[in-house]
Length: 358
Image 1 (cartoon, rainbow, N blue to C red):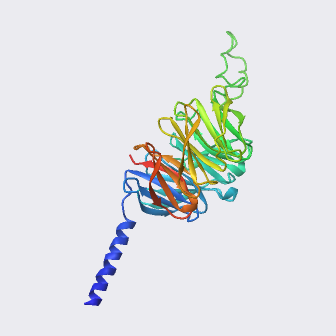
Image 2 (cartoon, rainbow, N blue to C red; image 1 turned 180 degrees about the vertical axis):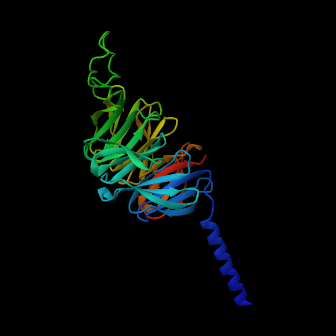
Image 3 (tube, rainbow, N blue to C red; image 1 turned 120 degrees about the vertical axis):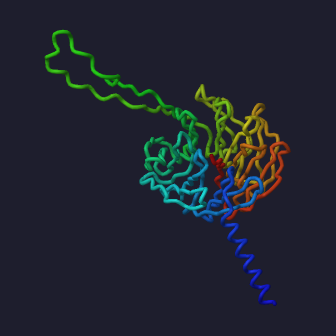
């Protein structure tokens, strides 16, 4: 009888394990990287349970989901030692072949816009885009800045913003028409009566689009940043100075420096309504909350021993904060500004993303 019960217990455990491994990825999913484990955790945002863990290679730092919510990309950073983007099939919960970026080493910041993965490459002092359809890096631009770290791309892909940590700058990069001398179109027709003359040599071919970069000095250790929902301001957190630089996008200049006391600041994110900005720091136990209109700190929320990635839930009034030293993601209610739950992830959680499957 005891032997029979033992067999039943083992069978139940095996079934339970099998069920966990094959829990379907929900239509809306929270993605969390555990850097030290080298895995991507897929989390059910309703139950706040990890339903799958998928390997994503060495030292993954940031993660982004495709617009259809079926694929995730993670940057294998290594401080410039690595040069790949890990790729995950979120439906099958399985790794796909990684993207080899060649000499573009130290990929870090990621975003997905216009069907492409946009990334920074710190060691190459560059940014680029990867096209999943053609499976190639189809565009590269050098920034000339040290540690180009995080990236934001406008929905129309006409403006790109990066923070450059060691240079203490923010780059605003905008696309121009690029029509250069002699490149505006086909040559004019020959004068009357000259049609039989030797045709003129063709001029240079039309130039493609070009890009202009404005480099704005902010503060030392500028890393985490966000663009206000109305697109008028850039807020950059300066980790070494403990300040927030506020840039007027139209003026291309810092209009205010806020003494926010956020030394070691890692990430800064606006709430979806733009009323608040949350700043995480690996140098302290709190997430700092600043009211955007007054530029005043209204609360410091205890989350653990330090925090990194921040993500706003697009469907609910809550924020997810990766508490790297503690191995969990803190869930913050944006009405009460208090931690309401903790999701156990693994070792050194950091990058966060939202995947909505279509």
